[in-house]
Amino acid sequence: MAKSNEPMVWSLFSAGGMIAALVTPVLILITGIAIPLGIVGADAIGFERAQAFAANPIGKLILLALVILPLWHGAHRFRFALIDLGLHGAKTALGATCYGFALICSVLAVVAVVQI
Image (cartoon, rainbow, N blue to C red; front, side, top):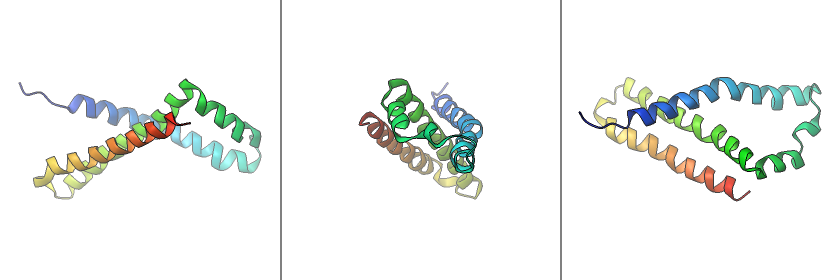
C-alpha cells in the first residue's frame, strides 16, 4: 500500500474550515459591528490588551491557528477548484503550488508572531 499525505492535508483542511466557519464570523462581528456600534467597549480590543494577548505564548498559538489553518483550508479548496475547472493533468504541480504557497505563508506567519 502506497504512503500518502492525505491524512495530514485533510486534517489541516478540516481544522481550517472549522475556524473559517465558526471563529472568523465571530471576530468579524466583534471588530466590525459590535465595537463600531458601541455594543462592546473600544477598550476591550485596545492596543495594550492586544499586545498583551500577542505576547502571551498561548495567545501566539491562537493567533497562528487563526491565520495558518484557514490558509491551508483555502489552499486545498483552491487546488480542487482548479482541478474541477479542468486542470486534471497538472494535479501534482497544482498541489505543489497551492500547498507550497500555504507553507511559505505559514512560515512567514510564524516568524511574524515569534517577533512580537
